[in-house]
Image 1 (cartoon, helix red, strand yellow):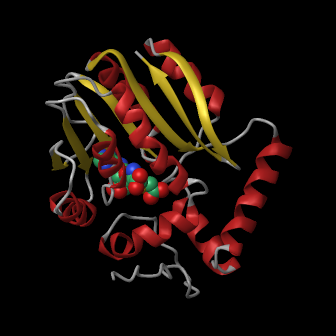
Image 2: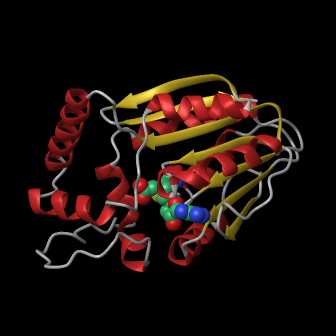
Length: 245
Ligand code: GEK
């Protein structure tokens, strides 16, 4: 049995907290970190085979953008029934993609190949895309880079294809914003993170993870041409939506 390594990266008090990076230290505890830091993460992953079965058409491509350890790619592979599909799992952090590669290469009863790419998602080509998943990845791009990326994704998609966009969000109403952040921190504390860990991680993510409101995400997708933009999951200040071409 594989023991999951515990995330205690921010457990010790530090004078100067460096900006958060997806380095080897983070990659080695990532499975534990994301489960205890993103409410609903496991639920979102569990739903993906259902979407994959419905939307992957014969000969199409599926993309897991910012794949980290490859949880999305593996979930898509488990759901795809259409023949001749291919999954691209892309991340620009070498420490993540090395682990993702091992997961993708492990024996599997599902036939769809997973190709792993160590690349910036702003620089890859999209073609015949039926499913494109950005599971808590877009939030790490500079705001100005988000629309051009989504536009290129749209152009590379087949009609009827979907984007799954999961993001930490913020709220225009200050009361709702502060309340949801507070509840989120209480949830993290209940998951075993100390107040110091929560506060130091928050500082490290400042200017690295830039959340936007649901309305901003929706408007951007609709301006590009995506239709039927529907949030299908929300827990506190985290949500996931689907948008169709
Ligand atoms: C999951 N989706 O387990 N190009 C490629 N990768 C990037 C870029 C970029 N420009 N910017 C950030 N990343 C995963 C979780 S984590 C979310 C996604 C989190 C990658 C980065 O290296 C990291 O692996 C991932 O996006 C974000 O479902 O840690 O909150």
